[in-house]
Image (cartoon, rainbow, N blue to C red; front, side):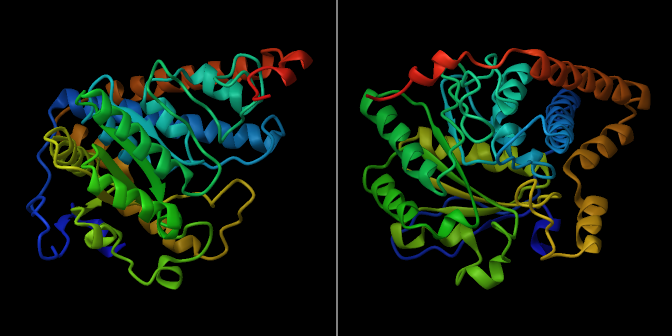
Length: 346
């Protein structure tokens, strides 16, 4: 994680025939408005996930529940680089992605509790929500499956002749799946406008990347396919947006796919049932203290003379939204039994 402590936008080694993708350098500063937007959006994800953890502990949420606490800068920064019509797809750690895409907290939380007002009518749960209106094509429970589907979204964009870009998020663990490399090959072969975003939180399902991956620089995973890649400080929303801007421009220019390895850290275990005994409490506390993505923005705003009261007001607004979503998600009716026979293939 030492490399992630800096704002890293490092080029990978380029093989013969592989075009240089970018240069190094510190991320550009945000405007006051960008900082405030980033703070608000990251706080919404953080408070939502904290509440989801509470509801899980109360038994209101069943099944699997994977929290995004600590990784908020990635989706918030990437969304700031997109335009309307661009598409997002991810794996099972997906609540933050939904909120960053503009999906309503009520609908997301109601799906977590299995209520009819949820985005999948209470039948998908934590890992399977979608929004055609927001161009969010799901959380997916099958490890790595979203990479192939995200590549398919990019193929559709190229086929239709538009300039939309598909973002396919996956983790360091999923990076070793075979379908990932089949997708890389097709994406580069057909110059598809897809950004592969590897959210490297270091531990996959519970095993350190140093013990599970022969190549731990995930930005190099596309070298044999001539796909450029960068390592990015995924804890700094400015670095994420800067890298996102570069990758999006690359794709819109018809140059094919791009890989971004976001070096990040999850504060909770793999899922709510994971005690995370494979790492120390001291390690988690050090990352929280030194690199927390929300505190970084908050400290910059305070240094820019934004008042503590204004920042507290943003947090209060976010907490009100999240508390209302939790209330809605516990009072909304469960789906009618007839829903067992809808939205299925026969």
